[in-house]
Length: 72
Image (cartoon, rainbow, N blue to C red; front, side, top):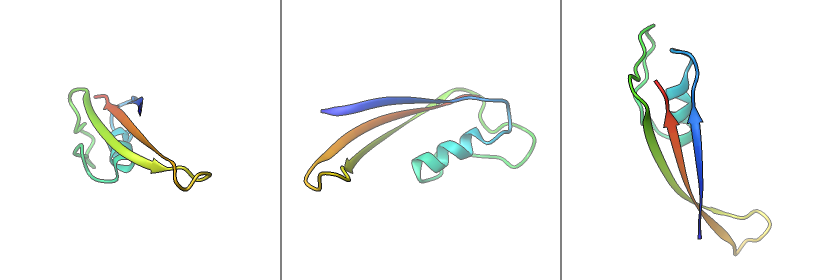
């Protein structure tokens, strides 16, 4: 069974929301900008499908589908 989660990243313009999304994804997915103009102009979603092994049970692993919503 796949466990599902949603994460909504929201806040004021130019505070690093897309940078946080990139960190969570482990790669650059949304483009970021160092200027005062926002690089994101609409809400976008990024889906991570990962399998994690339990720390307590070496033979056990859990699949996760995490949807990250990056707001403008």
